[in-house]
Length: 85
Image 1 (cartoon, rainbow, N blue to C red):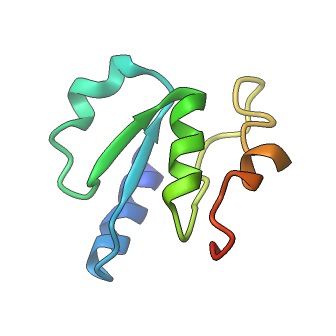
Image 2 (image 1 turned 90 degrees about the horizontal axis):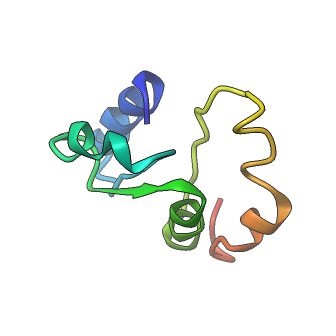
């Protein structure tokens, strides 16, 4: 949940959406807790599975690095709602 994620969350809130944010690590939790555009934050790979299971729409705005490559795998997409877009 960086600059692009935050800007996207601001737009989503304007449309009345509930916004779930994902941080790669819990260390960033203190800076995330007071974000006015995100309703709930999740952390790490386990959190990504929870976000997928709850979401109707998913926006991936992570930089492609060795740490993020394969983060949204077919298995992770399979955790999503059958009605998700």
